Length: 196
Image (cartoon, rainbow, N blue to C red):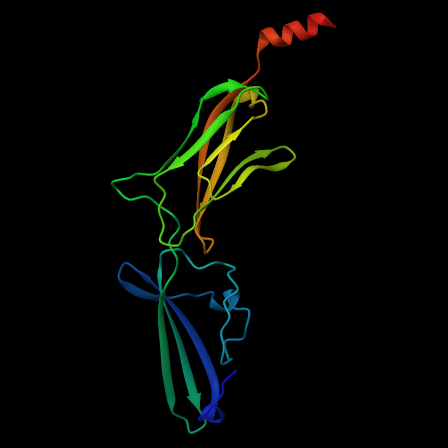
């Protein structure tokens, strides 16, 4: 809401969003789709759908059309949050030990190293997509998770892909997949079937 001296003199607002690409400013065509408020409003609310790109410079401009037929313009330059990453010296990586093991029996330890971000704390989510939906094994500040896994895909050499999502305190995130081979013990399976 426009408040204060001069607000009654404004007859129209027009919002424009520009994105910086290759050192040039280009107008964002779908600002109306992104806005949950009218573009002829003293306040602009961007709904996040479609979202702004991470680690990108934007310029928000409002043109004020006054009742005396003059025009004024105000602009705001902002930079969107960057998801967690790694420096060239530290590198970033998520891995599992052991890389191969038995379903439901063996413990698999997942570990992520080298992820940095200025917006602490970082949050790690270890998950697996299954036929019944997503299975979340661990969510929290620890970059490590020790879990027991179900049988891998027999059509793909018993491979499973565990997704690790690393997010900063503002929710900007990055995902990485860690592949692991999870099979079953044939000897144990044969002993069980022979005992019946």
